[in-house]
Amino acid sequence: MSKEIRSELVFVPAQFKKVQHERLIYSCRNCEKQAIATPVIKASAPAALIKGSIASASLVAGVINAKYVNSMPLYRQEKEFARQGVYLPRQNMANWLIRCADDYFKPLYERMRQELLTNDILHADETTTQVLKEPGRKPTSNSYMWLYRTGRSDRPVVLFEYQQTRAAEHPKAFLSGYKGYLHVDGYAAYHGLPKEIVIVGCFAHARRKFDEALKVMSEKDRAGSKAERGLQYCNALFAIERDIQNLSDEKRTEIRKERSQPLLEEFHTWLTLVEPQMLPKSKLGKAIHYTLDQWKYLTGYLLDPRLSISNNLAEQSIRPFTIGRKNSLFSDTPKGAFASAVIYSLVESAKASGLKPYVYFQHLLSRMPDMDFKNDPEKLESLLPWSSDLPEDCRLPADSAKNTQED
Image (cartoon, rainbow, N blue to C red; front, side, top):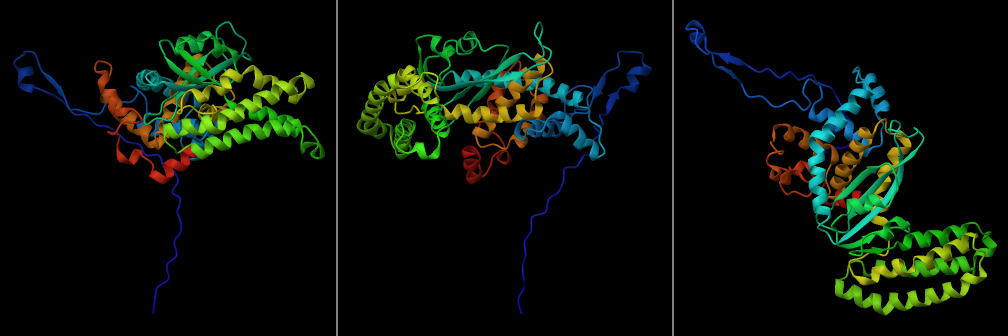
């Protein structure tokens, strides 16, 4: 009569398999009998990922994916592996990550930094982290993870840098030789950078402060309030940017001049009139003072049609680290913090290029032990996240890649 079809999705849990590599070794018996030098020939074999270790490319890629993509700390992975009948101490896994970051990922990181500095539009941000065993510091001291990334680019680069402090010397050193625009929040350390770096502020921070001022008010007092008025100005500016986001640079410049510039002038006039009426320490007073104080940076996005009204790209890129920090709490040593910075850089750059992080890291760790990239750095080009030489299975389908990047 007919047939009825029902589909369902089956989940197959991860499995562990023990793989042994056998390598035959040959010598010349005739040479031995004649008491002359005996040649020894070894069959070719893939190089070990870490000499003397059971770590494989797929296993380390899985640990990286769990920790740096899915925010699952090593102690939870250790427990999950134990439930599957495999004992993998967290210290072993931590050592694998540090070794792989130093031996394989650091050269890629340095190459990506070179690429980053060739762009003329960058974003930066920073957040706290904790490292227990920093020399001369208390375990409770705050350290910092700095983030630098490209703007909209077909070669997106996202780089993290671990530093012990939030001092202005760190972005100055990292961006040495850079010339171009830098999107940041209102942190004063960025304002002391060389004059070749043009600072562009973040209107999302200003908007957030007006939103916070509105939320502390009772609902009956919100309508028609100054806090609501300030928020409406910010929302109107963001609405213009949404309208023009897919237009040409020429058209964006034209519309910003026609719509954004007059609105900004009106907003600035309103701010200067309202500021004397506000208590400086009130939420609204702080929002108005911040906006006026940062005004020349907040309006910097009008300088170039490619610039953004906010620093949201950097905030989106640093968010996975802040989520992972809540679960992992801290790094044990500076080496571990450095390894995390390097690995997060590759993870977020891979995601920005529409790659599957696990497959990408498995590819890297399968290829790099047999590559002489230290003597021939050009070999690294085929391994960078934007390389067209990467296997197709590293890439997400187009629709999935777009949704992942938007998330």
